[in-house]
Length: 168
Image (cartoon, rainbow, N blue to C red; front, top):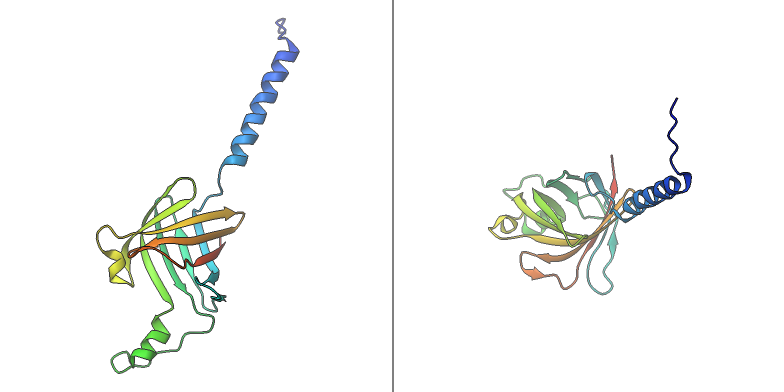
């Protein structure tokens, strides 16, 4: 049997302060962008630009340091190219233009700035040394919004916003 008695009020006060600190730390931490996501919508940039709800599957995988994304930003199924060797430029653009595929590393800075460095990409220019794409992001629950700020050409005048929904 323990005969030492701790003063009750200071112990309760310390416990309350500790619990309040834990709650504040939990509330101020941003939601994680790590996970597997699918594209739910793409708001194209510029005045009067539409929001596209992709009809084809997409997948973006974000680990602690690396990403891979395969997305279609088309609001209807892309046409099939029967023979790429004989397809017209318009046929190729209609099929491959709204398709994005790349993988690489990323870092987060300033709390909500995501900078992606492509290692492999459908667009060879995105793989050039020093090339990066920068987004601001907001993560809330199972939804992630990415708004493009810079690409390999510099600041984006009419940024797109990609809405992703967590798959797992």
